[in-house]
Each structure stands twice: as C-alpha cells, then as structure tokens.
Amino acid sequence: MNFKAKLLTFKIAGQLTDNANQPVSNISILVNNGVGTTITDNNGYYQKDVPFGWSGMIIPQSTNVTFNPAFYSHMIVVQDLINQNFIASGTPLPFEKPEWIVDETQFQYQQTITAIVNQSQNDWSIHDGDILAAFANTTCRGVSAPVETSQGKRFFLQIWSNQPNEKITFKYYNIIDQKIYMIIEKTIFSPNDALGTIRSPYEFTLSYSDILAIKDVNDDGVIDLKDVLILLNYVTGID
Image 1 (cartoon, rainbow, N blue to C red):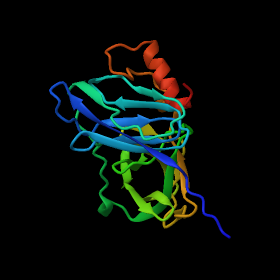
Image 2 (image 1 turned 180 degrees about the vertical axis):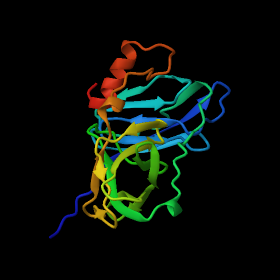
Image 3 (image 1 turned 120 degrees about the horizontal axis):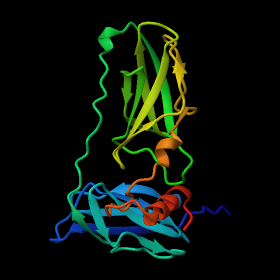
C-alpha cells in the first residue's frame, strides 16, 4: 500500500484600507520566517499560505505610509488567519522602475546568462516585475525580467559588447521595496558564450551593504530602535 504525504498549510489573508475605508493597492506585505512577500490587489486584499506550525510576523511595507497596526505576530499557527487587516495613513509613492535601456544595434557581439538572484535571508524570492541588468562602466548592456520555467523563475539575460574581456557589473531592481541593489558577482564578457542553464543557473548575490542598510522601516518619520528590531527580524527571522 502506498501513501502520499501532503503538506498542511493555512491561509493568511486580510485587507488594507485607508482612513476612509477605501482599499489601498500595491502595498507590500511581508510574511516572514521563510514565507515571503505579496502585494495587495486592486481591492486591497492580500493572501499568503503558511505551513503548519508557522510562527512569525505579518508586516506591511511602503514608503511614505504608516500602518495600524504596524504588524501582526503569531505563534504556532494551526488554522487559517483571515481578517489580518491594516489601515494605511499617507499616500504611497508610485512604482518607479529604473529606465535601463540597451540599443542592441550598436554592438557586434552578445553573451547570454541564464541566472537566478539570491541572498541569504529566508524571506527572499524573485517577483514578477523585478529587473536584472548588466553594465559596462555606467552604460547598460543588457536587461532581463524573470521568466517562469519548470525549475522556477529564471533570468535570460543577453549582454552586448563590441570587444571581448570587458568587465561587466550587475544591478537588481526589487519591485517589492522599489530599491536598486548592487550584485556582488562580476563577469568578463566573452562573445557568443553562454553561462548557466535552466537546471543549473548562474547564481547572482545581492550586496549586503544594500540589504542591511538601516532605514525608517516602519515609516514613522524617525530612525530608532523600533526600525532596527524590525529590520533584524526581517533579515534573521528571529522574533
């Protein structure tokens, strides 16, 4: 007799509204300790699944906005948690993607990289709308958005140049926190070369100098111990 195991999960859901009880969309909601982030939809709703026994925090995040409550904290979840609602005060800043553009007609050669982007904190994931870009000095030489594959999201990045052995650096735009991160790894341009595959992608890593920058995490207008504690929890997953 064969048995098939199924991971038991529970739903975390809620709505984010403003002081007039109107829905607020495009707000990042972090569900920490290995779960990840989601964004409120046009009706202000969000939803995320957590595993049986999950413990952690639900934290809304947006520039120029404060939230009531600032977060929810739960221990050993064994049922769905709906009505995890927030009230937002302030006007969220609009999404402003970087204008990274490359004119491929100006270059003779190309190199391709099939890649993923990592960093060590547990709540990291690649999102639709993120951007990976390649640069030679300050000139953009390639841009890629994530594509869903059988092995997860991958970046298929084409890099353009007129000469071999050019030093290539990389930047990453995260749509969730609307921030540009430097990539630790650098490559040397090799015409017609290909790095990585879907099954064995080239791995890029976000720079820790960007990840760990102290900022006004809870958007209360001051940088204080509360911001440090929330940021430490965000990075380590430890309450």
